[in-house]
Image (cartoon, helix red, strand yellow):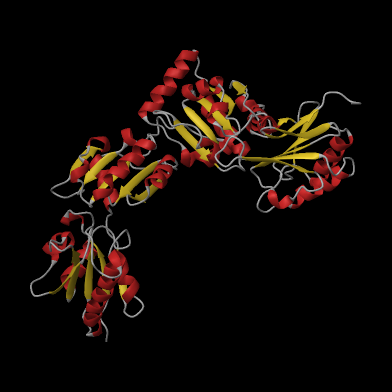
Length: 523
């Protein structure tokens, strides 16, 4: 009869934190298995030693590599995979012989533990049972004497081996965090903490619950001496300072921050206004070029305590110490607006960012509409204009919008296509040039062709059409085609179209094609 494999969680380091069941199994098992690096010192065995009995068989599983290089033909991963296969075979011999095996795991066996690799290779062949253990996250929180999360706060457990950019983004969008696997990765972890604005609230706990436990502020740690078994803790905001979100804004609660620096900043802003109410400022960042952001918008961004917006636009706003950033998807305009208004109602100076001009198919309408709700009636709302994509694209080709013109969106997400089609026909019949926003997406191409066919009922096939993509951005392209030759496959969501009128003219200039719509008729 085969033996049983036990995954024994030992807790973070203090032998007194070993559970009663773990201690019993350690003492009863035929074989005690444990891992260590090449130096041979096993933290797990040291924790379990008080509960082991004399004469037990021991399987010492020594990693061939940890952080050093290897000449294994499969590289680091090849060496590790081979080690796990070999270690599993050694344990399988005991299990096949009917011996029970207690494989020790610091912390919890299923929480960033080497036990998982053995379980994956053995559990389908032998009876196994997991004994959970106290994790280092809990031990570190206890060492701080500070609650890690409370109420509905969200805790993210993150490996320090993540790329700095990804770690930064995850730190921005969680209430509390525990960062594991530090060691030589700590410089990148500290950079992510700094870039996300969380460094001042972060703590470093080394060898939690052991006799060598150390607790420091994360900013004060000597990067050269950080062991692998250290953890960084960012506690969630305290309830008495946490912003309470209500209504639609509650969906964004997980992105909230409330550290001392931000609280002070918000308080100072409110005091300067002489009121407990902040304000919401909706700004346009222009279509892409940094030079097209107005000084007025730049000042508003510098004075804000909180920045709210769609992730793509948020990435264009420089980070500032003490500011909190609340990113969200581009399809939750109303929820984003409600969150901004609620933050302002609680005393914060909030900037909502839009690309282009906020009043042109952007966030100004959502914020102003939401502000009509009686619960926000005391919240001031301002809108600061920006360069809109239509003007940016037009400027690259001269003056195709030099006379009466219209702006239309081809998106039928918020209005039926019948309404869109009726407006296209009306504008085409009125003989106005018009700019087309949101012409297509990866799943929506047919509207461009349908629009072209509707306009051809009123315009000549040779009518100039300007196609501008990513204007002001790093991949900008602008060219001119004709209405008849407009190809929907060349149009995507980052494209803006300008459809000419009967008075729109195209000619060749020394620096390339130039387009204008005359302000005179009859020429």
